[in-house]
Image (cartoon, rainbow, N blue to C red; front, side, top):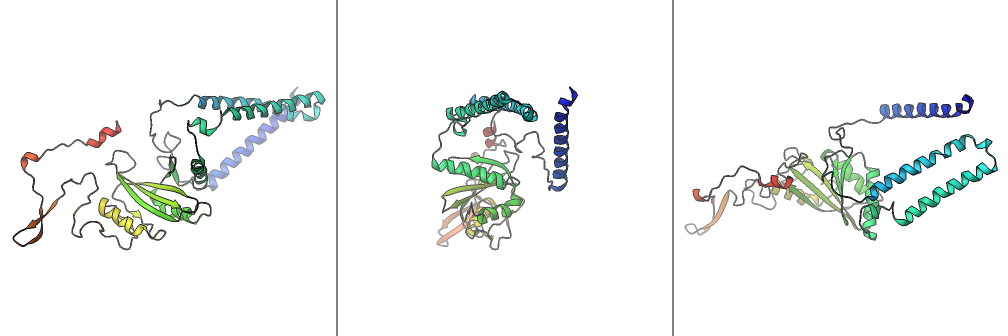
Length: 319
């Protein structure tokens, strides 16, 4: 009786030794770079954007059950493989019939749309949207080491990366033969007022591939103090765009050769698009009849119009 299970014991022992050896080799050779977000309780590496009790389709559960069932059924093939030379013709016919039924069941479920990704997400994708879906899988496989989040839109793919990796990441996007992201359309900044823990400012680099007609938005967070690496060496159009970001938001770009104001006066103080910048500004421009010309003066507000409210009104959007 024990000789019948000696093969199972040998295969289990070999599988345990090989898996342990591969795990040790990968731990010793692979470059380790742990951080607080990757080591957090969330497997995705960042805090969830939605609530855990949001409704979603019950087909997610169906897919999970189907995978469990198929795994259990495939396990029955293992004893047949061990005792292959001891089977008679009837045993071989039963084995092939069982495998045939598994294939037919899988094809039938696929035809019903149970394991279709479009059905699971409750959307109908056209040809353009399938392009972004394949683009998502390609980038997530190629550059998974530098990405910690995705935003999937119908006609736009958003990628969250660390600001320290932006030069290397954009170099791959531009030089890769499949991506060839050769055009920078715009740099858009959002002032979050430290509502989220990632950083105060969200910097969005919007790129376009003219040949394959798809857009990629590279997103980084910045606290407003640490400088961001300039991409002027990769995209010449970022010269004026980075100057606008510096002028409007005060974000500094490292290794930018001409970082000066472009939309406001050279003597302007402050950065107008910050949410802590007053709407009326600090300087008032008016026509001086005495000198027959324009003059600048400090903004004066009467005491009756002053209203002090130290509560951040933007915090209500986080509730």
